[in-house]
Image (cartoon, rainbow, N blue to C red; front, side):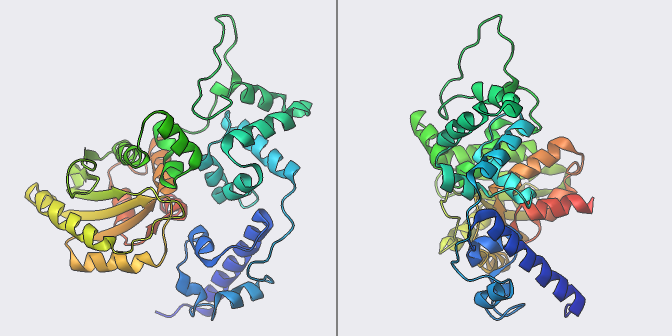
Length: 363
């Protein structure tokens, strides 16, 4: 059915407003791939559906491809960082910065902080220096004083008579730390990978384990496979009351996951595990890849995998969205019973933070 003119115009206005807000926030014009992931739209929107080309879209927004804008002042960035530290009760991780940037239009992107300040430890040191000169941020200074100087290093020991540090209290998030780091781990974050190396851990293995933990927290019965188990998926997560199961694979990728020729391997996973699941009485089988971000053009490949296999859907789940689902599960009863979660997995599409928020609005 053809979209109504008013719906089309509203959609165009939303995207034009979003790209202008992105430029104001980050100080540069985004590329089509990154912007598409941010707003949850596929490339064809700017290549024939609403505009003839990406350049036409930018020109209508009053922008030029590759244009650099006046960067956000450092003091403004640090004020945002201090405010987020205060609201969380702790110095934010990269995933928390990314989530804040996606939730609040006025909040700079995680990339902006990294570009300006570098690694998380350098960002922490700069914020400490900034708040030390501002009495209004004494509470933030106290939180930062209780934060380890370098990621992965032990916290300073407290004497028996010393009061508990404010940075250890009143976090708003219910997500366990083992899952909280999922987005950074999936995106190949350098700080996270250094911590893995220091502890003798393999990032890809850690991602598999923590994705499995996230699915357990969502109420699924998880069988971890993965490393050392031969040519199999990383795991199978069953929801036995609803007689459905999710076969999943987790991928660490800097710059986002691109399917390439891996669709053949995924078809093999579905065939192999699908037979076992059917024998076990599973009526609906879904497949998913979990990674930091995805190329929207892979949605077509995912749908082709579904056409050629017994999977009912192939979801491309962003790690930040999986983390948000855990938060939703722990805060509300929306995901109890499994129906809402199954609806989300039953679409062969990218599952991002927008999809999780839409699910929440439906309730």
